[in-house]
Image (cartoon, rainbow, N blue to C red):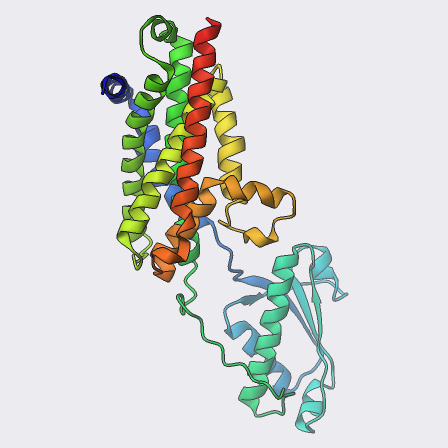
Length: 370
């Protein structure tokens, strides 16, 4: 009970100092709102408006209809090019693909014969090249079906139906990941700044001289910025409902528990970073390099975890954002039950306790060295 009273006293002190600093208040509440807008609107994985050059050496109706079918999809846009060779648009970075239609294209289709079209794709971006290839193959099959032309058919015809996200709304994939990044990085930064500020202002010497223990100090600061972090999470989640029209379809209690543990993990990580850094710049670098880049690249936010090369993929097992993103996508997209991701709160709790122990050990070491 005595430990809790001292920790709460430290919490009151931190919240009072927080309210007195307008810049810190803006960092806590305004920047997360803006960052959520940037992530939600600027992060686009679906390729659209891909520039394509057409070299049509056939003047027949079939070739014109084929070109119209390609650009009617909205995935590709035509470009005009003045080069003499079909590779010029690719070499000059004017187009991502060049489609060459031979002179006998329409005549061969009229005679129900095979007509070949050459497609030259810029392979600089492998993922984009794959999208272009698959898109053109699908549009070609659609064109043949519209014209009633014979198609090469397989004995097995898959009937595909998209589950959870039939409209292929990209926000349902991006927004839960953006919530995870914003909810973690800003409370971590605030907690790290609070620890470093004590060093820069020299007030940490008073803490060393007082009877407060390292655990009470870390716990008090963590509780203060945990409350602020929960307010930040409420802002970005409400923003996702209003701005991005993302519905909530999961278990509210499961998502709330994961959010509490996730915010706590970010805060105690920030306190640990503050014990290791001697100035605010160093604290930012620790949070950015260890926390932000790890949450961005090793959490499954943009790239699937299974695509990460071994042994770097092992690091993703201790990245808190990985488990929270799974819980957030379950809450906003899949709508699963507790059993779907039961391990997420367990891992988040373990990561929180791990960084709490590191922060207490670092503070105790600093006290003993003085």
